Image (cartoon, rainbow, N blue to C red):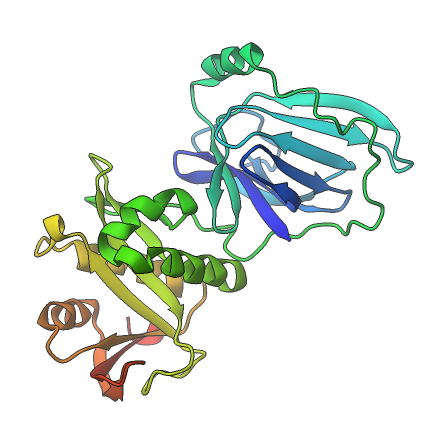
Length: 312
């Protein structure tokens, strides 16, 4: 499976590299790449590669140049990269001093910030090497990896909120609104991100980081009357402490704009039960229009709302 490993600087992508996920356990993560694997690197206005974060940059297409396995330990800083030539001879080892990788639906993220010196000290105190892979030649059958759908999704900021793709580390907080269905909803979100490049967003207060709710986006799927299986269905669940505060509308506007812009979705739908007046008000504020009567998967009567990109 191809995954994206990204460095983020101020909620923007600084680098993105496609890797093949070889192993993922609580003890370690092993990635592998070969020449030709897809990457994105930062460049300045003149097109020259940037090595340190700058005020402005763009991402340029590039390709990985080496046979390289990468080994890291979940939740710990630093990773070890081993470089091989095309004959499988080990050439060199490189230790990357970085923040711990955080799992995303489509790979792993790490932050670029001013804490590199602290990270160096932590890594040197408990080095992530040797890896035990120095004598293992790369898999010759490994294909160049491509960046997976969703790799270009970055955190969304509104006046009061910050939205990030729903990730395994968010499961405990998401259970506040999804309850026992939280693992199933996480699986649905992860699958949608990996296959379609969009999914659920974790919504937090921008100032405090406190959990505020979840915005959902997935394919309608079978069993819903009024929404075709291939159409995008959206929904919102707000933490009880923030209900009536406009959180659903504010989060949904940002997420729908991302669906229409970055993800290229042409229209979205929402299934709302007639008695759910708060969600009907949110749909109206988003500009959604009642499309038809429908039924939920359990047979309940529902109203189907729609918003098209060309009229949003």
